[in-house]
Image (cartoon, rainbow, N blue to C red; front, side):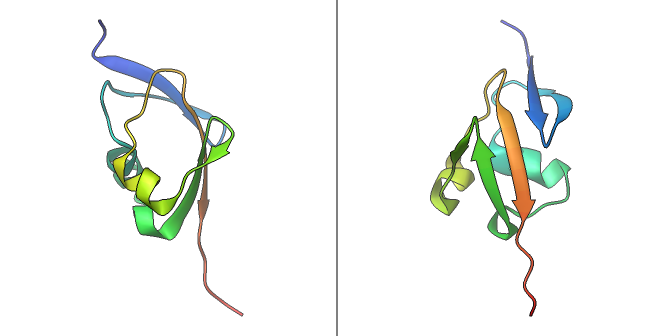
Length: 70
């Protein structure tokens, strides 16, 4: 079993540690989990799911920053 997995986030490929969590990955991007909305493999994640999700080889993420304003 490999210690690395391949994922795609917002169309860009990444190679990350196997068993990496979604919050860990977001941290590497400089994003706070509570300030983004994540779709994984075409399914939107709830904030609770985002906080406990472990990434898997082949996952495709779309990450959108939440921006307040008027």
